[in-house]
Image 1 (cartoon, rainbow, N blue to C red):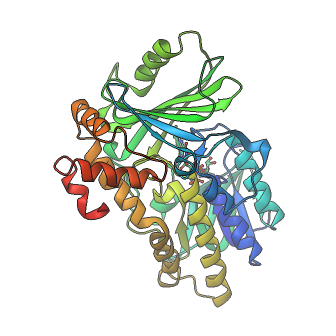
Image 2 (cartoon, rainbow, N blue to C red):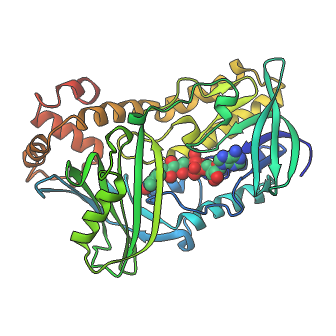
Length: 395
Ligand SMILES: Cc1cc2nc3c(=O)[nH]c(=O)nc-3n(C[C@H](O)[C@H](O)[C@H](O)COP(=O)(O)OP(=O)(O)OC[C@H]3O[C@@H](n4cnc5c(N)ncnc54)[C@H](O)[C@@H]3O)c2cc1C
């Protein structure tokens, strides 16, 4: 590890690796650091991603694809199911990944592109000079304090991000802005290998949803994400999940537990500062409705890496110059996040009865050509009163 780079990327998740790869491919001298000793481990993810959005960044490899699903079913509280078929729901969930191997493959690609990668290296602070971020301090291999300088620091340090805060950017999340999640990997169960399931309702997932994502070999990720403000003793995500799994898969064996949080508040207002950019969960770029953040993190990383490389070539890393990244990712998927937040806010206020009525209203409709967006449009048209506040955004 040198003591000066063009760019330091903090965090080796999907956002960090794609950022590092993109900037390195454009000739920048890049260091990516990861505080854990193993990239991708422990996994905090249900591992569902849309195929086309992954293929933008990496060639599919069977080593990190646990399952390919053909569609998904959304269940209302009374069990009424809405089915989205292959091509369509494929745009929401297509692969169920092995995230450990996927994250490692992305980091490999960054390294092959020329980035230096250091594990067990935790950023502990920012070097600030004349209002500019000029590098980081870090704890290397758990024992050595190091100072590494760079023209740009990119915070790809996930939901627990400190990089933004250290640079004076407000990254605070209120309890209602966090989806608190728990997930079991359940083995030896009868599960449809071709369909992802989403369950709604106050019993299975108050102000959130419960998912079943098949991973092949009679295994599935069964998890739940609920608003942080709805958790209470006895109603923690893990309590609700245990009840569901006991009833639905009484003979299933729980072979892994994941707990974690998703920023579900919509993105932060400012993702750049002088000499600094934030990408992925660190910038709260997760879709507030679906909780999906992998593809957005990768898309944002690719924009960030390209803008960082141009800014360095021009010798201007000011906030104004880096604003191109902020504008770029908002143009790409910012509107989608805003819409998802509005839908989420409306849906969490619906009663079980409302949700059942919505599901009944689209029974018999042909979803062969509809994606999630199309389903929402159909729901709004059939239920204009209930979903009045969303009309302007969708219809
Ligand atoms: C239970 C759960 C289920 C989910 N399911 C899905 C899903 O099915 N599909 C989907 O698309 N998204 C899902 N998500 C969201 C998805 O996991 C994230 O959006 C995605 O991982 C974001 O990538 P990232 O690179 O921004 O952050 P991360 O993947 O969190 O990577 C950040 C990295 O930074 C490292 N780091 C943090 N601080 C430091 C530091 N100081 N120094 C060095 N390194 C540091 C961390 O160790 C970590 O490796 C889920 C999230 C949870 C919690």
